Figure 1 (cartoon, rainbow, N blue to C red):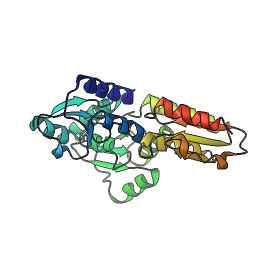
Figure 2: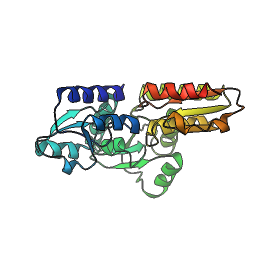
Figure 3: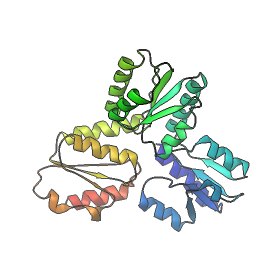
Figure 4: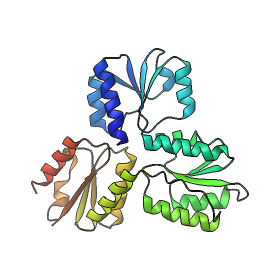
Length: 272
């Protein structure tokens, strides 16, 4: 839903011919889609200071740190906010509890743009961890148990792992630890479906951008089943020799993967 909303907003701006038009970072994590918009005159700029005053910038579905948004507005940049409503809700929930003096424990990828945006709303401070092992290390070295905390997650994280984290923290840190359920329902459904398919097949193919967090999570889900899994961006990258002889092959795709690319992969698999 968030990806579709961001693309519809960008499409509306390109139809209006409002130039110069920028996106702050890639509008979605899919190189083929980015190439399409580049041909339409949409410029991807990773440095917010490089966007000229008077230009229009589309904030992508991941959102941005609030200090960056504030800086753009102060320089007279026109902002089209295409932050996913689920991400925006997570930002506001984090701001609410952080304003009460609680520190954020965030399950996510520290360098991911969505995570950087979420952390910017945690005024009282934050600890970010990408795994249970990383959380265990924080509990031993950096987390002061005298502080008050709350837990949230990057919207595309694995729901099963998050539930294990909730259990661990309520056992080890605070039995009444506030928890924000910020993982997107669509993400959870896609992971559950991938897990279900993986139990029925001999191999999996996941289609999507290599830098897409939710796509990589689907790969992890499939490989967690113990079966071979290929992660490809386009049909030409399929290793058909490795799939030859498999009786059943599962196919799924990341949230930002265009339908025509999924269809092309399905067609190529159909030749086996």
